[in-house]
Amino acid sequence: MNLHARIELYGGPEDGREITLPVSGEGEPLSPLPVPRASEENEGVAWYERDQHMGRGFWVYKYADSQSAEHPQAG
Figure 1 (cartoon, rainbow, N blue to C red):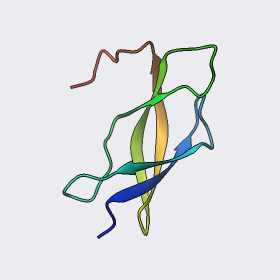
Figure 2: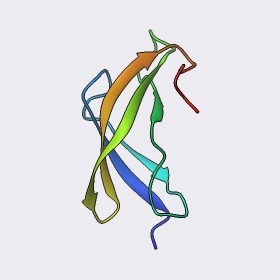
Figure 3: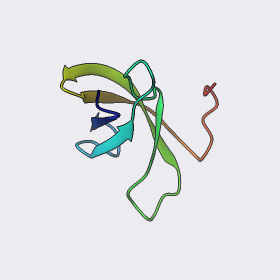
Figure 4: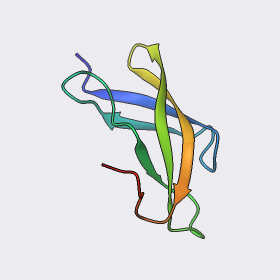
């Protein structure tokens, strides 16, 4: 079993960015996912939610929200 997943971010400020993350015991990556902004101008994070499993350890996450370092609905 692959212990990592490739994730493509869809929409929002990180649209098109691809990242690799560890997966849980169930074989799924974390959701919602806080993604630090690639831009040095903004120290916030963009939140993405798991949308589709494309097979072979590849997932698509859709943009959900943009916040400062803390997400009020996380938990």
